[in-house]
Structures are given as structure tokens and as C-alpha cells.
Image (cartoon, rainbow, N blue to C red; front, side, top):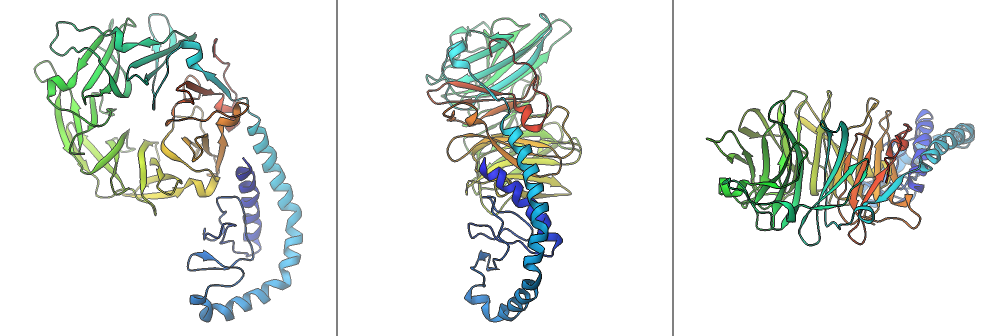
Amino acid sequence: MWASRNIARCETMVRGLAALSWIVSCDGRGEYVGDGRCGANGSCARDVSCASGKCGSGSPDASAEASSDASLDAAAEASDAFHDVAAEASDASLDVAAEASDASLDARLACPIHVTDVTRLSGGQVAGPVAVGVSVNRTLNHVDERIMAHSPLDHMLLFERIGSWQQVIDVTKVVVPTSSMQSCQVSTIRAVGQFGESINDAFTTIDFWTALTTDGRFIQVMSYDGGAWNNCVDVTSVSHQSFVGPPQSLTDHGSSVLLGPSHQALVMRWASFADDWRVRSQVGGNLVGSFASWKSPQKADSFAAMQDDGSIQIFRSTLQDVWKQDVVDARAGTPMVGGVVGWSDAAAEYLAAAGQNGDLFLFTGGNGSWQATDVTQEDGETAVGVPTRYELANAASGEQVLVARNATNHLIYHWRDPSLRWHAFDLSTAVPGGEAVEADPTGWGAPAEAVAAQGIGDRLLLFEGLECLRGKPVPPAPDGG
């Protein structure tokens, strides 16, 4: 929290110094951060010289000394005369601006973040990232919030909030085989995939979850018209294809992409009873981690995956079952690790991932290139694993939210405000003593902003009231948390 406060003060100082022709180029940790920028720890050094990308103690290093001593001395003498006067003249306005910024940040830090121990209410423990599904129950006319999780026993557990949290359902024990050749008996799973919903006709709604079993099978567990989750399709038994990574639904309304044994992206799709589930496209190579999918502003179906060299590969389709790799990938000064999340708006495309150096990166795509922003350098918080994000209701232009674990397993809310400035808030400190998380989070933005993650003791934790951090009203909490 102190980093966020200091950064706001630092940014205010940078603007003041820029008006006085000062160049701020080093932070308090001895790292070069560029002209007019603030360091990750919120410090703002004015009288520190930089050479060879590192900070000195008032003079450049030996390699640059001969060529720059004279100009540095001249610049120092020229600036000394007005340094004290300028600093005194600007101190009052800087303090006022910093105090106003601090007050705004303090108000957000006082937000009533609500943390619910869903395991205590519903039973059931979780292991690893969870999947979230929000849908409107047409029969009962209310919003159903569901969380599917992988349990420590490799079972598939379903948590449902229908007004309040219901008793957990062990889907592994509910699904029964039928006479269909596609049907399966759920045994144990390695990871959950995603929630999906399809409307077969005016009277039949099918909800489904995807998952990867411990023996590498791609399955779908289904419910018809809000009934029991007792139907299952074993895609692997039909396609004769095994997988090593969980499924990601694509935006072409029917396809999923999974990581194959040769670490290529395998695009699967069911076409008809005569043209059943099978591999429709095989692209990429040396891929690792999870996939992210979105539709570009140009309406191209897109997905991304991380390569083993730390770059992010992007794949496009404008014709069904025809996928091609972009010639331009997303890279930063450090390799990315873990996995990637992707989305778009009318103006651009975005990717987010954690770097090998522990920094959170945002990649903005447009005009055939990707621009990397080191979020950690701007808001002071580290990131590990795969971040999550969600659509913001009534978002102002430029607003973005990313949520990720930091290096100490605290859950961090990263918010880019309409002025394109990043702020970090520690959600784990909303509970006295703190609530650390042990797996990557999953977030959603409707009916209210919320993030779910595995807590200590394999508990399912739910963080709500996040609208307050953006200065928005918080919807009333549902009954029972």
C-alpha cells in the first residue's frame, strides 16, 4: 500500500519537475527507468545521474566519465542557481497535490472488501485455479453464479450461488453413463476448463463445463434445462486424441483449443452427428501453459499461447477451421512465464502475463505490433502465475483491471484509471491477519465484480466489493455471502 501512495506522490513530483526542466531518470533502487518516470518502489530521485542504464551517486560511471564530465558539471552549475528556488516554489503545490492523491487512495484503501469462505458455507475443498459460469435461469428467472473446481482428490466439484451458496455437488459421483457412444463416466480430473451455454431450440437449454481428466481425456459435463449434471461427453473417445493441457473455448461458437502431446495447439470442433468431434486445425509449436481467446476489433477469432522461449504467440482465423499464426508475436525485455490472458475492445487488443522477473506486463496490440507496459514498474506490485481480468461495468475510457498473485501470495488488484495511471491494492489485507491465496485467481464482472481463488487449507475464497476500488457503488451482497 505504501508503494501506491508513494508512486502517486512521485508522479505528482515528476509533473512538477518536468515543468521546471528537471529530468527524473533513476529510482531509489539504482535502476534506470527513463526520463520523467517513477521507480517501482515509489521513489523519485532528482539529483542522480545515469550511465550505462544504472544509477550513479551524482556522477556517471567510468566508461562515460570522460565524455560527459564537462557537460554534467556545466548542467549542474547552471541548475544549482535555480534548484533551491524552484524546489521551494514547487514544494507547496506538490504537497497539496500529493495530499489530495493520498486522500483519494486512502478512501479506496478503506473500501469494504468482502471475503467469503465458500468452503465453510458449502463444504468441499479446491486445488488449483477454478472456472466460473454466470447465466440467467430462464425457468426460475434469476442469475445463477457457479464455480467449478478441481478438488485435492481430483474430483470435479460444483459450487452454486442461487440467492445463497448451496451445498457443493461432487459431479464426479453424479454423472452416469448412458447408451450413447459419446457418453462417459467421469473418473478423476487434472484441471477444469470453462463454462458454456447453448440453446438447442426454444425449449431446451444446455449448460456445460469442460475439463481434462488425469489420463488426458477432454470431457464435457452437461445439464439440460437446469437439471442434474448427469450427462457427459468424452471427446477423446470419439476423436482418438489425447491432450496435456486444459481446454479453452474459442470465440467461433463451437471450437475449443487444447495443448497436444507434441506441444502444438489442437483446435477441436463438433460439426454434426455425421461429422463428430475431431481435430480441425493443428498450429504452433513448443507451446506451454494455458490459452487465451478473444475476438479482434476486426472480428477475427483469435487465441494466444506462450512459447517455451517466453514469447507469446498469436493465432487468427477468419474462415472456419483455418487458423494461422501471426508473423508478429508479443515480447518484452524478460521472458513471460505461466500463462496468458487476452481480450479486446473497439480500439485495441490486449494480453497480460507475468514476467520471469516477477513483473506484471500488459501488451497492447494495434497496427501489426505489440507494445509492452511494465505494470509493476508503475504500481509497485509483483506478479506470479496467470493473471485474470473481466469486463468492467460502466467503465471509463482507458480503464483496465488485472488481478494476480504477488510474490508473497497476496491477491493484488491492479487498476488503470482513466488517466492511464496504474494503482495496486492488496485484497488479501481485507481480512484481519491477511488471506493468502495458493493458486491463480479467476474473476468476473457481472452481476457484480468478484474474484475467486484457492486459499490456505484448500478453501475456496471469494472477494467482492471491488467496485469501490474504482470509486463505483458496490451492489448489495447476496444472502449468505
